[in-house]
Each structure stands twice: as C-alpha cells, then as structure tokens.
Image (cartoon, rainbow, N blue to C red; front, side, top):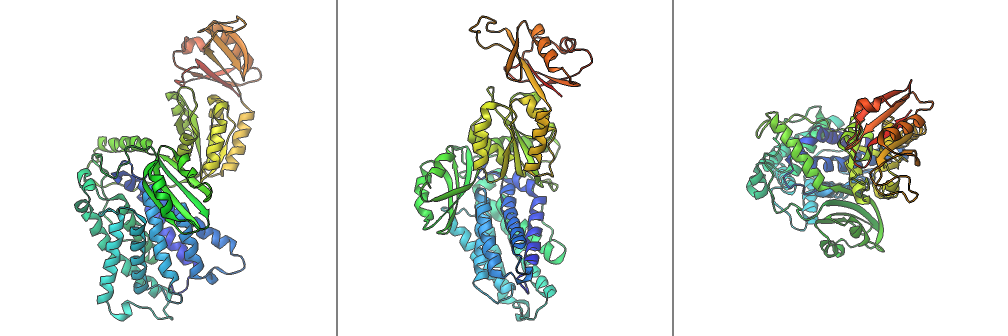
Amino acid sequence: MSDPSLVRFRVAVQGALAHLESRRQEINDLNVFPVADGDTGDNMALTLRAVLTELDRLETETTDRSIDEIGRNEIVETVARAALLGARGNSGVILSQLIRGAAEELVSRPGELVDPVLLGAAFANAANRAYASVQAPAEGTMLTVMRDMATSIAHDLAHLPEEARRLAGEADVATQNALIAAALERAIVAGEASVKRGPELLPALREAGVVDAGGYGVIIIFAGIVDALKGSAPELQHYAPAARVTHPEHASETYRYCTNFAVTGSGLEAQRFVPLLEQIGDSILVVGDHATLKVHVHTDEPEKATDLFAGAGEVSRLDVADMRAQVIEREARLSAVGSDGNGAGAPVGDAAAIEHCCGALAIVTGAGLTGLFESLGATVLDGGPTLNPSTMEILAGIHDVPAEEVVVLPNSSNVFMAAERAAELSDKKVVVIESRSQQAGLSAAFALTADRSADENATAMNEALEAVRTGGVAPAARQDPEGRFTIGDAVGYVGEDLVAWGEPSKTLQIVLGQLSTDAELVTCIEGQDAPLDGDAVAALAPAGVELELEDGGQPSWWWLLAAE
C-alpha cells in the first residue's frame, strides 16, 4: 500500500470475504473431520466478516481524521483484535492467528511500503503464529498450506530483481498493487500444490478422498485479494464434496458442542487454562494476549468451560454450535448431491451463502409445523414433545441461523427464560419475541423480513401477535379435581383460559365459536391422532368465517387455533 489507506485495505478484505462466501458451501462439504470445528467455510467467513465490520466501525467512528490519515498501526491492531474476537471453530481461530501474525509484522516495520519483501515477512510470521497456537499441529492442513506459501514467497525473493522485490517511497498505487498481486499469484500456485499434497500427509484426508477444507479456504481468500488488487482472480480448482465420512483421529466423537468465547481482563495466561479445559473437553485452542483470550473447546458442558474463567476476566461473545446436528445436515446435503449425479470428482458450483441481516429461530414440535415455519424463512429448533429445549440447545440454534441478527420465537411460556439467557450469552444481536404458542409464533413469523434489523422485526412481530387470538383443543392428561372431565376427554382453551370440555366435536365447536368473534380467518392446525377429519372440522366453523386447515403433526394438542 503506497499509503495505509483504510479504503484500500477494506477493499482487499472485502474481496477476500466475497471470494470465500462464493465457495463457502464447497468448503463446508469438504470438512472431513465430522465435524471438528463446525462448518469450516462458515467459520472462516465469519472471522473475516468480523474484520470487515471492525474496519467499518473504525471508519465511522474516526471523525476527526480523514480515512487516509489513519495509520497502518491502528488499522492492523484493530484488525488483529477483531479477527481474534470474531473467530469461531478451529479454522476460524487459526485464521485469526494467521491474520494476527501478518499484522504483527506489518506493525514492526513502520514507514515501509507493502511490497514482496514485507509480504514475505508477513507470511512467514503468520505461519509461525498459527503453528504456535495449536498444541499438536497436523501436517496437510491449513497450517502446512500457509507455511508452503510463505516458503514460496521467500524462494521467489531470492531470484527476483531488486525492482520486483522492493518499492521506493514514490511508487504509485497501481505499481504497488501489481507487484503485490504478482507475488500473491505465485504464492497461490504453491498453495494449490500444498492443498493437493495434503492427503499424502494426513491419513484422515486420504481415507475420505478429500483435500483439507481449511487449506483450500486459505488459497480462496488470497485469490479474492488478488481479484481486489487487479480486477481478476486466478482460476482455482473446484473440489467435490466428501464421498464418504470416516472417523479420523481429529473427530470429536465424544463431545457435542463446539464452544467459542472471549475473555478480557489483565495478566491472562493462555496455557494455564488448557489443562482445566482438557478435563471437560477436547480440540482445545486458547490464544491471544495478556488482555484478551479467545477460547475454543469441544464439550458437552459449555457453561463449565466459561466458569473456568470466573475471576480471571469477563467472558463474552459466547457461541455454541451443535456438531451432531451439523453432521446430520452435512450427510443429508451430500446425499442429495450424490442423488443428483454430482459424485466424487465432479466440480461443485459456487454456493450463494450470503448471510441475511436478520433471521428467526423458531422452537417447534411437529413435522408439519416445522415445514410451515421453514416456509416462512425461519430456522427451526426441535423442542421435543414437551417443547422445552435447554439454554445451550437454543444457543446452538441461534448459531445456526444464517444471519447477523436473530429474533427467537420461543412458542411456549416455559421457554422464555431459557431463550432470554441464550440471547444474553450469544455473540449475535438477539431479540426474544413473546410468542406463547406455536400458532401465535406462526402468525409472528409472517412478519419476518430478512433485510430489517432484529429490533425492527421484533416490532413488526409483536404487532402481529397483538392482532391474533389463539386457542386449542387437547386430550386431558389428568383428571379434573372438580370432576368436569377425566383423562382422555377433550379440553378446550381460548388463550390460557379453559372454556370447554367433554366430547371432541362439541369442545372444538365451542372454542371455534369463541375465537371467531369479529374474526375473518381462523387457522386450524391438526396434531397427532386428532379424532376428527378435515371435513368434520370444517363443518364446525361458524358461518361467515373462513377456516384454513393445516397439518401440524404436533403431539399433545389435537388442534391449535389462531384467529385474525
């Protein structure tokens, strides 16, 4: 960079992120350690997105200086911290260390233009930083790829003429961009060769018939930077998703949650916490400095992981991913690819995996209701027969929503406290909607708009909830102390008030009658083992009211009702 301009640096980061986003699903599908750090492409993209967000913040908040007056030191220091705090999963944490290592080298040479010599030093320090962050580095992974790219640049420097190695202070932007792009293109060639050689170095890759997802992600990132510098990116080979899933030594077969969080304080010593984390999990990374640590661990007890840092500093940015759910989703996705004839060795098309501004997490039970919520764009968390997931399950569900901000539809009064706690813990912006039933949540979900903020969506959803009345009919689970009904009889509710009981048809008719007052439309969602068919239900609707019948498949409730 002929000047350490935030604008130009942002263009490079944005180019890297855009390139990574375009092939994010391809990287996810290559992830053979099912699933060692969640979805590799997602985690690397989210780490870069955190860097981009921090650059935007720096630009917005720096009002007393022009963009070009912001120094390199300030840019790289804020970028290194943003990468560390935004990192998720093994691949994201290692990528943050690559960024940090490169940033440290740039800061150490004030006044020098970024040219192939400084680039080579930055690559070397990045590789060293990343290797040092991992307790047992595995060759054939993104660590090896970065080291091989650094070695390639060092080799080039020994054979390039001086004018292709160093830049004088008067060099213009176009000259600098061209020189950096040329050096990166040569390094990418070495990186591609390293990625292809990975299966020779790592048996897990060889057994699964794939290359390393993280290493592939690294060369995609640099290809995006080249694209930003010269307007065209080098062609990279597409890799087919894994044809089969193995059980390599890096798989966390014992633990369920990929847990990430930050710790801020003073006098923090990363290695002091590693033995403690090993007692409750594996795949442990603790990186950072004396003021800020980033922690990654696979465990069944995320709360215990954060509790280990009580008194040492403030825990924030907690992110929990359900790796078992990701394995199931990945296998289903790859099975679908195979059934379409896109088997091993076939190119994989670019995946449009761009995050929305805001998404919704709906806690649901019943296959039909799951489909209804998903048709409205919500991510669904199976709440089980009692619709009562744990805080950590909700937090993992929030992680899985492909959006920067999330609204949560608890769909049960019993879920509110767990949902609120998950919202507090999440590193995303999360708003919990007061939906007290699935049918109410469905009405709220109609108001979801992906390009609005969570607060804006919450306002629209709460307005929708105010306009809907709910009810339901269910078989009684216990005998009434007052003798009005016995186990198995129908009980009917409007809101939370018991209004009818006895025979199913009559009970449903009373509930429909009360709900339908001043209503134009009543939605009736049929549950498991409902004792009346659709025609019989439709015949019970009051005159002048449109009845919409849906198959919800929910347990416990024969019919869920909503009137608008």
